[in-house]
Image 1 (cartoon, rainbow, N blue to C red):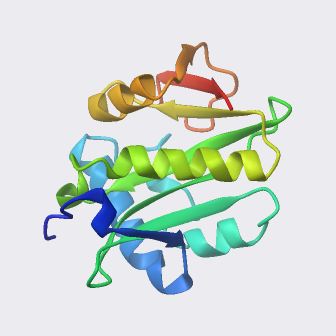
Image 2 (image 1 turned 90 degrees about the horizontal axis):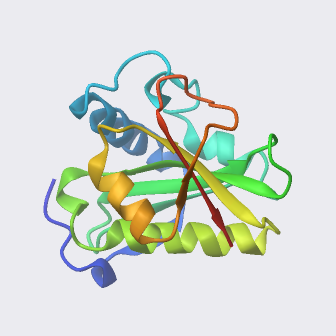
Length: 167
C-alpha cells in the first residue's frame, strides 16, 4: 500500500458495498499483525467482510466510514453502532488503517468524524474495547480523552482495555 501522505489528501465517506472486501482485509491484516487473529476478536465477526450491509441495515443508529486517497485506494475505516448495555451510548467499532495510512493523523480525523456522527445520532457517549497489544490505538484513544473503565459487557472476550468518552 502506498503512503497516505497528509490526512487532508484523504477523503472520508460512508462505506459502500464495493469497499467491503478491501476493508475486511485491512481489518483482518491489522488483527493478524498483532496476534489477534483468534476467537474473541473482531477477526471472526460475521460482518467483518460485509461491513456496508451491517452498518447500512440500521442507519438511524449505526455508521461506518472509509478513508480513500486521491487515487481511490481504500486506506482504512471506522464506525459506530448502538451499545445497549449503556443507555445513550454507542460503541466505536472496527477502526483499522492500512500500514501506509498510519502515522499521518488519519486515526485522529476518523475518530473525530465518528464522534460527530454519534452526536448527530443522539448518543451521549462512546464506549470502546481494545487490546493491550494495540499500543498505538490506546495512545490515540487516551490522547483524545477516552477514559479507561472496567468492562461493561465485552463483545469480544479477548479484549482487555475498555474506554468511554462523554460527547
